[in-house]
Image 1 (cartoon, rainbow, N blue to C red):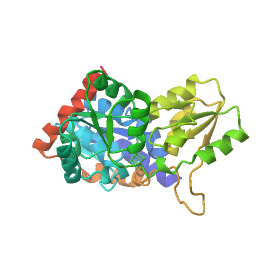
Image 2: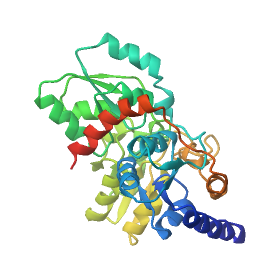
Image 3: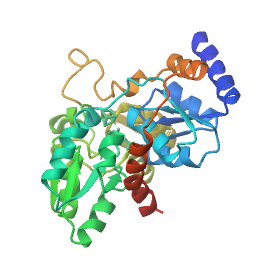
Image 4: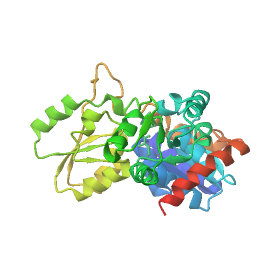
Length: 319
Ligand code: CIZ
Ligand code: SF4
């Protein structure tokens, strides 16, 4: 619509005027992903978003995603101003792992190396020895396992269980889940697979084990897009937030992508397979953040330095 076009033009002007760059997650709206592409920003998973933001020379990073992504950007680039379209955009994993309860859990298990998923608050990261994203979680745990370390893992129990299953590591799991991925159903995937036996199944390991068990490829968002390109199949059943279809379809224009079925349907579930917090990012509030400098991420300096250590371990591990 013409309104959106005007908004897009305004955002482009504001990005330039503010020496700002837009960093967007794969799960945000197509219009935001497209804008990030057109303006020299990036569309990526949380690890690549963090790297891109830290390396970019812009004075202001506009992070379209959820809160922990903005916080991570600020922790890595304290000298930059970090704005988000809305500070209300959180994550069920972050919400399900309050820093005080998590601290008590760590205190109760002092013999374990604390590894937390990137989808956590700065305060939870500050308690961790390592931060990981799903792109490198398996490698990091294998590395720690080889050193004989026992792991305390938080917050996603499905991703933790998947890594445990893959590596055989001794892992104590926090009981958290992603409300989006948890809705995928093995029965639904099997039914769809029966209709399209030639389709490959791609699954993000935040999904339940029964769904991951049906996967031809399980992996992070970036790994799933890569697999979509590399697999010979021209039909793909995809179990992750439907926001990923924008970049995945660009990567494989000739292939047919199917959303993996969820527990709900149009009648019972308004936005199955789409994160309600990612969906809070829109052209309007993005323009508003740039216009007014609102939605700024602030992280206390002491907390920032404590959270930086496990984040840097992750970034240095993958170099
Ligand atoms: O589910 C999420 O929030 C993901 C996949 C984040 C990420 O690592 O990009
Ligand atoms: Fe959190 Fe799930 Fe949303 Fe990702 S998709 S931000 S893990 S609630």
